[in-house]
Length: 248
Image (cartoon, rainbow, N blue to C red; front, side, top):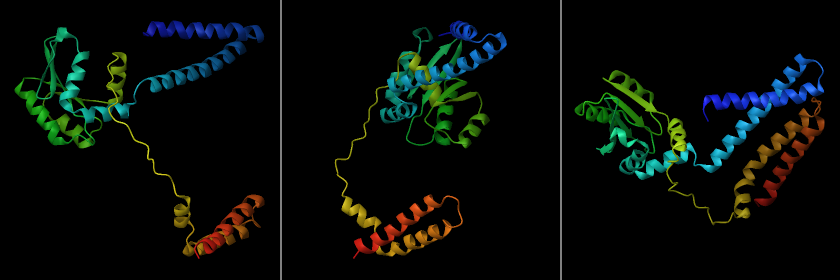
């Protein structure tokens, strides 16, 4: 949806709301003000629902970064080169994507890993780009350090760190998000409540619950929230008793 479509959509929606509100409210100024508030509310709700639908339909930014990190640079290059128009004659070399647009050579370096991109990796990509006569470099990574940005600013050429969220939106538009290649397995181990209680209800903790219960009970006499503090004091004193009884 381009900007013109958005303007038409917003204008039409506001006009429809204004027509109905103006029918209910006699004064035009009040009708416009109320219609504008309702329009803003519905717009925020609509955007929220659309974003939620997209989040459920597509993998998240974190899942995309995780999948690319698992795939490795070579496979990521093979995946991303599909979204670059063939007219730019893209090709893969040294785990990077190189292409030429409007006479300018460009390099894309996927550096997805399970941590921050190091300065050594940035310098390595820059040295390789220099051998190819490339000044424009796009670094794709999950995260980078501030020192890496400072290093990139000191080097010759134009080095740009592409944010994962921006790459995520770009791949959604081109229907080119990677397949999620990992899955967290649910633990089949059942929780043993007796073991859990044995770790909580320990005799040495009884004095702490007792102290808390007495403090809350005394504080209830000075606070307007008497019922609240009495309930909390009762729970704390009960826990003190439970610690002594359970851990015998």
